[in-house]
Image (cartoon, rainbow, N blue to C red):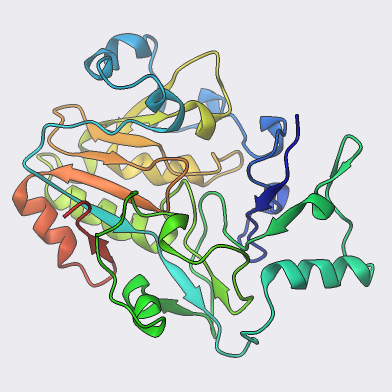
Amino acid sequence: MIMPAQVDRHDRAPLAANEDVHRGVCLPFAFSVSCRDDAVMALMRGVAEPGRELSWLADRPDIEAVTGYDAQGWESSTWLLHAMYENPSLPTEITHHQGRQSRIAEGLIEPLIVGEVNLDERSIVTGTPLGFVVRPGSPWQRLRWSDYAARAGHALNADQPAPPGHRWFPSGSWPISIDPPPEGSLDDVSLTALLRLLAEHSAQGADSPCFAFYASLASGDFDHQTLLSGPLQAIRELIEGENPYRSTPSNFWPHNRAWFVWTDWDLWATKISGSHTLINALRGEPDLETIDWPT
């Protein structure tokens, strides 16, 4: 059954094949994700027996195999807030939803129809991207979550009932002048900084052997576990190339489990767990915005 829902959409993201994403409705997963063939990956390889390598996560709730694992047991952790951007040359009074409806009315784009259902008549385009996005060019500028909160008259704090996501912001459609944080994936700038710091705090640096897990919602495969293995530096390979995944992995970690990365499919931030030294380095990285939730 298809229900009225908000629509998350990112006009700027360089994902032409999957550019329009209507969240919260029953769509074939082939519409929004692309499953990989191991043959196209040079360094990341599928694990022959993923169940064995994932057995240490067996005590986690079953739902986490669908959205991503929130494993426990490290010295410290912090949340990496996915980057959002602002274009000061665009009007603030026009929303992403209004902009899309206007383009449809002018015949510039076609409405999104699945079966006999016109999703543009039954949902709201919020502007939130689903999956990996790259940093936009000028005149787009980084907009920190803390600066957005200050503009709204309150400080960004961890006194929230839910982890960082859409509940931390006003509901509805964003102004077209703002590209909100991506949901379910690290963004380009955050991924680059994170991989560099993880390499600096890993025994074999960028060559440290790692596992990368895609939960069912991220992979689109509800019948098989998607687990890959390869060097840390190859994580980026999963979202680049001719047939990339739509998002960064739901989880990735080194074989020695010195640290752990969790990006839930429904959240706008990524939890990093590891040593105090690593977490403090993440907190002090200029290209990253972090928050400790809960307090």
